Amino acid sequence: MIHHLTCIVCPNGCALTYDDKLDEVKGNKCPRGESFAKEEILAPKRNLTALVKTIYSNQPVVSVRLSNKILKKDIFQAMKIIDEIIIDHPMKLGDIIIKDFLNYQDVNLILTKDVKGE
Ligand code: SF4
Image (cartoon, rainbow, N blue to C red; front, side, top):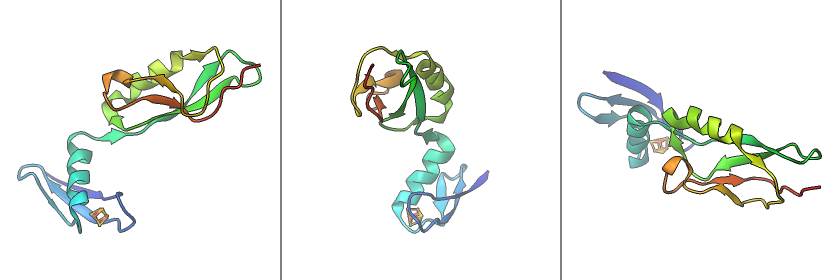
């Protein structure tokens, strides 16, 4: 099967095709397009931003993000875990809430805002 996709790695936006029988990418102006196309078709990954709850009425939720992309198929499970978190003490922007999130060695769930407490 031939898959058609647009490379989003840089502003050139090359129109790519990926032939899954030949494992061949065409249309890419640089090697990054080949990696992008293969990952996007064979094992698509996404980053994730979300809100987690706190115990503080003056800041009932706070924003978080993953430090790296995870497989798209794991996003639903990730959201379930994030939904159960309740922050109960002051924390700083960049603090790690969960290390090695979903057992990914290079992915942490981190705060993108301070939790000041009351
Ligand atoms: S293939 Fe290379 S040049 Fe084309 S959009 Fe992707 S990164 Fe940019």
